[in-house]
Picture (spheres, rainbow, N blue to C red):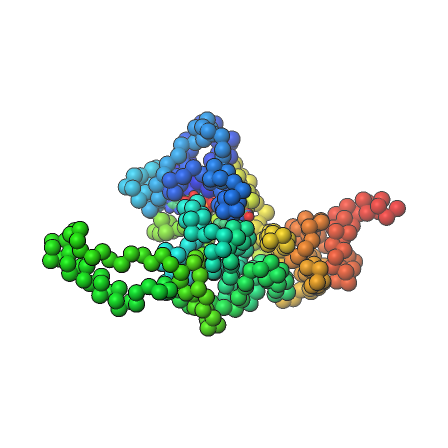
Length: 456
Ligand SMILES: Cc1cc2nc3c(=O)[nH]c(=O)nc-3n(C[C@H](O)[C@H](O)[C@H](O)COP(=O)(O)OP(=O)(O)OC[C@H]3O[C@@H](n4cnc5c(N)ncnc54)[C@H](O)[C@@H]3O)c2cc1C
């Protein structure tokens, strides 16, 4: 039995190890395409903060770890899959056959169509290579604009702030982390971040990025034309020919939709991601925001599985496809995929949104259907000056979602209530009156005797 795993991030690595644990005789090939040992993207902020070196980002640090487990590795980009012949074709023209294939290729950053986005001062923050470039470009005092204040954007923002840069964050949404936080909570995070000295522009878009003080476009074009002309006249390659204008490396001006123009040294793009699925074209594998998988991580095509950021599992509540792009989810899905790839039969209960964010020391969380249900009830407790907040969302007497800020004690109880689909009974009304009593509610409905003992 030959298992091919496309992707050597957390999903790929956990799957490879789990496959070996399940079957000591199978052949395992794990493929990455960045020419680097398997590493963790979530360690990149620590690298930028200089808390760790590159080796610290590696998922497995022991030399010979994969060899000892007889996990073969290959560095090549999957270009296409022939699901009928069970073959993967790679960009370097090599081919691998498979009996079972796992898609664990993660995602890549979206590049919004903004003029100037290809300037050398503009950088993603997704790969180790990006991190190396950012480390070179940013020094204490560098002026930086960051596009996007989502979950990953907030993590990057913190790392940049710790590098001592002068930072402005531009977010299209009406608040920070709009796809993870309620309007009130996103607003409180914005206020916190601004108090720490970071400028935040919400409901604003970057419209264009232009070099400051570079030769105007017409002049650049004519010198390009001149250099081409001299090359033509001299048969090309003449050392004397005026070279094309060097990439402009000075500051750039960033124009916002609000009319504001910012002069900065670096622009960091954190404007969302898309799954790496181009190579699946023509396979018939169903894709909807990610590779659609059932609870056992099987795609709709026989012997092809998917896990991690590339996979859209079924939402815990709605049963709709949902990508949960966090590392623990990648690992859970990879384990389940591996068991099923080796003939087992196991399932995940459904993807539950679990977001925990530390923004410059302010902890925020959201769980489940934190945005609520139109037929449900909700309650919000706001303690703005203390940076404490809680919002609970109910359907009937079941807690389906929650958002919190500034609460580190017992927030796991919120997750427990949601994941356990606990019927709250009389506790629903008590929580509507005092949402902060969620821990007592959790104890009361999950361990009624414990509460009775405590009360006694
Ligand atoms: C800056 C940053 C901070 C983060 N912080 C956190 C955090 O605090 N907590 C958290 O839970 N998550 C965090 N994440 C998200 C987390 O890193 C991802 O959820 C996790 O990496 C997903 O793992 P994966 O294996 O599915 O995908 P990836 O880690 O993206 O790995 C996919 C692999 O597939 C390879 N690949 C892609 N295309 C091909 C191809 N065609 N052929 C062969 N190989 C291919 C890629 O090179 C890559 O190595 C962070 C991410 C970033 C970028």
